[in-house]
Amino acid sequence: MKKSKKERSLLNVGFGNMVRADRVVAIAAPNSSPMKRLKDEARDVRRLIDVTHGRKTRSLIVMDSNHIVLSAIQTETISQRYAMLDKNSSDNDKQSD
Image 1 (cartoon, rainbow, N blue to C red):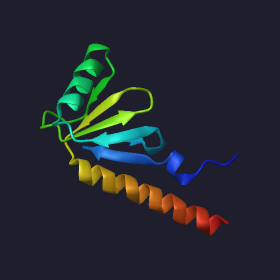
Image 2: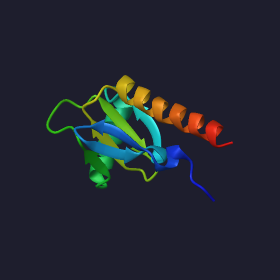
Image 3: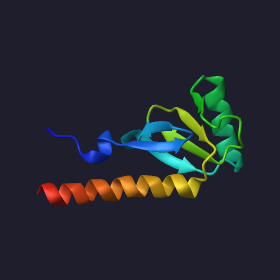
């Protein structure tokens, strides 16, 4: 069985760091109380991945493995990158049919 392009794609989350696009569950802004609790809980159980390089956290990326990735890139920017991966994969699927 052939994997789709999206399943093989990497999503750029800033500073040369990538996550597998097919493993992303949610991309959220970190400033609400539930997101702060989620981040704190992930830190406590050692499932927090900080790729901000010391900058302000602007996005929280929830992975299907329950890992939380902190990024310094705006939530909207990461969402747009994710949408482009999705669009490119659907365009490639149409061409292969």
